Image 1 (cartoon, rainbow, N blue to C red):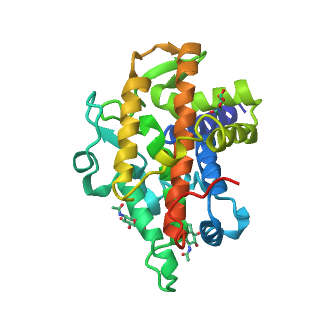
Image 2 (cartoon, rainbow, N blue to C red; image 1 turned 90 degrees about the vertical axis):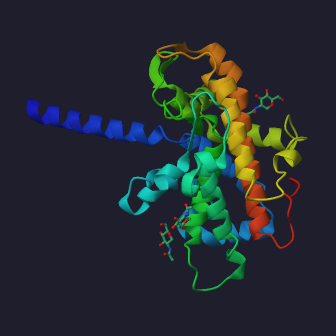
Length: 297
Ligand SMILES: *[C@@H]1O[C@H](CO)[C@@H](O)[C@H](O)[C@H]1NC(C)=O
Ligand SMILES: *[C@@H]1O[C@H](CO)[C@@H](O)[C@H](O)[C@H]1NC(C)=O
Ligand SMILES: *[C@@H]1O[C@H](CO)[C@@H](O)[C@H](O)[C@H]1NC(C)=O
């Protein structure tokens, strides 16, 4: 029996390691869900129709239900090629993003957004012999629009975007990348929204439509050229990573109230920007003439 228990513990710890590993590579599940829900609520009629059409019927038209799918499949053999598409490694302490230097062969999150956006542009042609699976294109694009807005996904090379910088988050062990992927979001959910994701979403959407960001969303979705915009968004992220995420943090440090309070507004703004911009792309690629995000109703 003791052996059996040991075995079980061993398996449990393997599962824990595997799941922690997964979580360490992207906005938390909650971050992606929020980005996708904000986006879907800003879609015009054509984009709403296209998205519903592309989603598998078991999710009832809810894009956010599959926004974390690219994290779930990234280690499957068939999808291993997508693993480098979740982030960008930039030179240590340089605080810039240079597409040619940092996105070799377009294999980074900025290149992936270009790739899947251009695949979706074929949707309206409606040809039956499509080269790409546009359901996958939609899910990848939606996920990567979240990742490119997570500041630490555009981080330094030697610390793997903060993954190797161990810190404590209040009382538990974490690392700087996790803090930005999930700790800040989960602490906000617990402290301010009674763990109710819908309440967090409502607060964000309120700030997008009529609150603190209402005047900004036009400039957020400014994008003359869908192919240069990802470079702009990645540049914003590495700037935020340098100014807010890495700044003043040392290995082994405990991060708590002061870090949480000052960084939460950055995290919520990036989630909202990701959502507004995802809506802008989907409205542009699927819309008839509608090249702007529609006014909220
Ligand atoms: C673009 O996506 C397709 C699959 O849809 C993939 O085969 C191709 O390698 C991707 N290109 C880049 C540069 O990631
Ligand atoms: C498109 O991709 C999804 C997810 O990988 C898969 O479930 C679906 O069967 C694919 N559709 C086609 C037509 O191959
Ligand atoms: C929304 O804006 C209010 C200020 O009007 C702010 O207190 C709150 O934290 C914001 N919420 C989010 C999720 O950004």
